[in-house]
Image 1 (cartoon, rainbow, N blue to C red):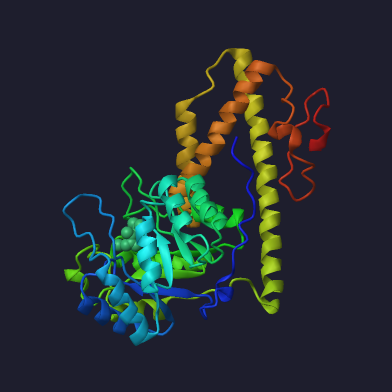
Image 2: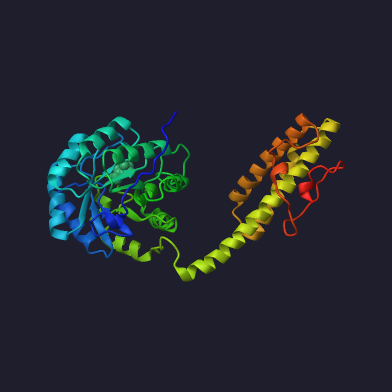
Amino acid sequence: MAPERQPLEVKALSDWGLGLDRPFLIAGPCSAESREQVLATAKGVAAVPGVKAFRAGVWKPRTRPGAFEGAGEAALDWLREVKETTGLITLTEVATAEHVEACLKAGIDALWIGARTTPNPFSVQEIADALKGTDVPVLVKNPINPDLGLWIGALERLRRAGVERLAAVHRGFSWFDRTPYRNDPMWEFPIRLKAAFPDLELLCDPSHIAGSRSLLGAVAQQALDLNFSGLMVETHCDPPNALSDADQQIDPGALRTLIEGLIFREASPGAALKDRLQALRDQIDRIDEDIAHKLGARLDIAERIGEYKAEHNVAILQPERWEAILQRQLALARELGLGEAFVETFMNAIHEESIRRQKMAWEHGHAPAEGSQASVIPDVGTNGGSVNLAGPQGERTNHT
Ligand code: PEP
Ligand code: MN
C-alpha cells in the first residue's frame, strides 16, 4: 500500500531569500554552448524587465547519441560569470550526484531535475542524498510520461532530504497521439499536483510544451491564467543556430515582446473583485445544480425506455436514434458557439451512462438501484427543470 501523503511544507518564493516573488521569470538557452553564447544571451536576458534568473543546460540528456550533450563542467564557470556580470540567479540541470557536487562547488544558485530524470527514483534519490544539508533551491520538472505519482515521489524525496526551497515545473508530457505540441500540456496533471500541495510553487516551461516559437505565447498565457507562479523560457542569442532545441528558442528581443504581451494574473482576487466574482460563482453553482437535475431527469427517462425495451425484447443500442441525437446537439452547439468536440464528448458520456442505466433496468426490474442517479438526485424544486418521474406505485417521492 502507498504511504499516506503528508503535506510538503515548502517555502513560498518570497521566502527563498533570493528577492523573488510572482511572477518568477527564468530565461536562458537550452544548452550552454560556449562562453560567448552564454554571456551574450545573459546580457540580453538581463535587459528584459522582470527576468530574475538565467538557465542553461550544462549536461544535456539527449534522446539519441551523437547529439550535442552540453559543454559539461567547464560551462559552470560561464554561469558564475553570468552571475557576477548580470546579477541574475543561475540555474542548471542535474542528473547525478557528481553534477550536484560540481554545481555546489561552482556556486550555482539553484538546480533543476529534468523530465528524463524525475521518473527514475534511483537517480532522484542519488540527487536528494547529495543535497542533504545544503538547502539549495530545486525545481522538479514533471516526468516525461504522464504519471503524477512519480512527480510527487520525486518532490517528496527532495523534501525528505531537507530541501525546503522546492518548486515544480510543468513541461508537458510525451504522448503517443499527435498533438500540436511537442509535449502535450495535459493541464490536469499540474492542476492535480497543486490541489494535492497548495503551497508548492508551480512554474511552467512553455518552451518544451510548445516545441515551436508560434505556440509559445499561447501556452505561457494559459499557464498564467491557471495561476502558475512563473515561467521558464528557453532564450538564445541566435536561435536558428542553437545546438539543441533550435525550433523553440527565442532571442532576448522576442522574450521582451513575449513578456510585454502576457497578462499576469493576481494569485487571488482583491476585496472589490471578490464580491463580483462571488456573484458570478453563485450563478455558476445554480447552473451546475440545474445541470445535475436535468441529467437526473434524463437518465430516469433513459431507464424507463430500458424497461420498455426489456418488455418488448428490443436491443438497447439503436444507432440511428443515437446518431440523430448527436447531429441535433452538434447543430445546436454550432448555433450557440460551443466547441463541437466538447459537446460530442459530453453527449457520449451521457450516452454511456444512459446505456448503463438501461442495462440496470433490464437486470433489476423496475426500481432504480440504491445509490443510482435516480435515488440520489434531490428535490428538483421549482427552478430545476422539474420532471415528475414518480412511478405508478408512487415510489421516488423525492422527485416531486
Ligand atoms: C531543458 O530544460 O533543456 C530540458 C532538457 O528539459 P526537459 O527535461 O523538460 O526535457
Ligand atoms: Mn531544451
